[in-house]
Image 1 (cartoon, rainbow, N blue to C red):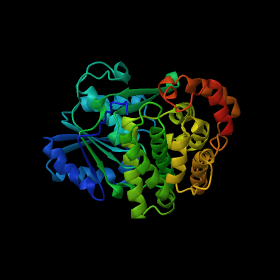
Image 2: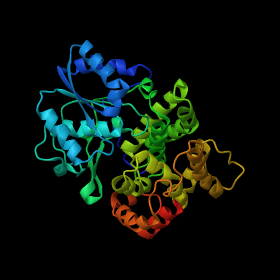
Image 3: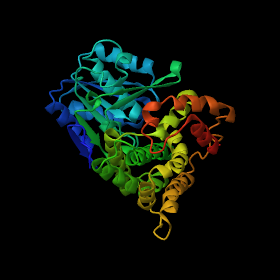
Length: 386
């Protein structure tokens, strides 16, 4: 009750089947005459890039494509996109793909109007001017990057990640169309879906910024993802499941944008940077073990998560209900045949001390975890994942 709440989302969000048809008209309404479409080879190979180009050209807008974004993009990838953008005369940037493409698009847009290099703006609220307008279109249901003020870039030299946080990262328009997710293979559906579930759980249990507003979105995200992620993986053309996953990811992203994430993400970063484990796979593996550790920090909320995930727990003491939340996540991972251990990911036990050291340096996320977590605790969690 003593919180003064803040809440940010894009100016406009279009969400639902066929929402991507709004791209051309909305870009035109922004005054676009030449658009840069930032994406990756997977999106291009799926035919989505061509469809988006057609949608824009039909509205009388010129389009050029940069589809060299790679998973877990690093500073070099980001700089390549900025260089490409500066060679053209673009008035709107469209980012289409997973979080990687959308983050690269967002950073490119602000670097069109702000001097210096990307590394000058690593941190919170360092970007001085709005970028050129952006439209973000997720082709996966997971990252929530279309509604978050954060952009994440890998820094292999530092064995970590660079994060830019600014309201200027938010797009002018977000478009969420479940039709665009149907071509996602099961492995991408499961990993991106677990990323979204981690966002929702962590935002819901965030120590300082969880609020009555973010809880609304986080709880609905947990329900929608929990009831549909298995079906979306098992039957990718099930429209009801795809709708739930698209909206669940959107809601989780809104919760993440306004509350934040905690230790799951801190512990997952070393897996991505050092071992190139997909972000959602790393989050999925770590989520139940971090949840188990965090239960004492917020027993009522973890008990509620168990119920939101469909566990029948009313007959149990509250503490046992809370621990069932982690068990529910483990069941989801098992049913989707996702990685259950670091061994599955070919990460040796000998790597744990260095990973724990790297994760413990992420004080930005660990300081807001619902339970205080030391370097020794982190090492213990990694060992449970063996």
